[in-house]
Length: 131
Image (cartoon, rainbow, N blue to C red; front, side):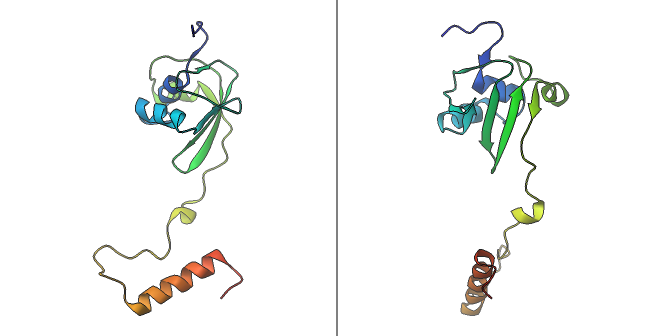
């Protein structure tokens, strides 16, 4: 597949505009089906062009970006922000990401009482009406 001057591989582009940390992570995301271009799963060598919508599931959230500019080399964060329009939903609040019911490292094995309290806490999170 010959790419014209206005296109670049999708794995290279998402790495160049700093949506993922490494090129191998970008390739793995494409192979794993976590990258979609215009609502179609793509392989790493698929091309993106200006105007395409790229959806990337990475790090527990979905990024939805519209390609504005094609870059072939990794650029700094300010330049990368100009290469796409970010239509992603806002990230979840930090409080939602903190797991409740985790034990401190080195606290030892939980006792039967501790385990029952953890189960009660988890059940109340799963079903807010229970209590």
